[in-house]
Image (cartoon, rainbow, N blue to C red; front, side):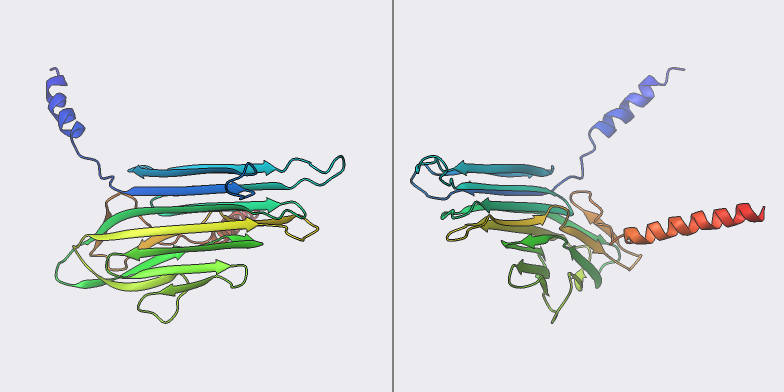
Length: 274
């Protein structure tokens, strides 16, 4: 019997099943060197990327070297800056750097801002709120004149934000809580569409005015900005517009290394017994 006529309607149905993807990503990266606006001693580059249902990533660079005007051996001012970013649901990465040679009086600067928006529902029995654990894990480093900030915000009014610069260490704040470390639990309605917005922004600048040495600064958050959503009530499922799971925080890498070593040690012991 020819099964093709039977399979053809099934394939047609599958072909018209709508995708679950429904999210947006946005990225803005800017780099400038020797920011003497209105003169020739200036170089800059910038990119703005906005995508629907796909990740965004880009990088820019700016470089300018002031011509030698004082004859052989005279110092030149060299400015260099860069910025890059990557964003997809649950993941934000941003970095920027800037440098200026000794006695460079003007400014080099770089900045990167990434964000994504998504929505989700907690699907299950109706008529109540349940606890949702929101995590915004941030790891990165600053050097020189640099700063970083970010937030994760829900349409319920719940949010986690952080700031950090060369003068103050990283600090988090959470709505409805006196203090937090990037993880907070909120009571949210079930079977209700909730929107989520996440942002990570970094910047770095450098000037060597009256300084006899190279000045450098950097904000490296290129492997950071991880967003997780966790629920402990097994009667509910997290359904997201993008299809991304926002799985709870995984066990640290050190745990798996320890477990692997322990397993290898156990196997070695068993071989000796045999």
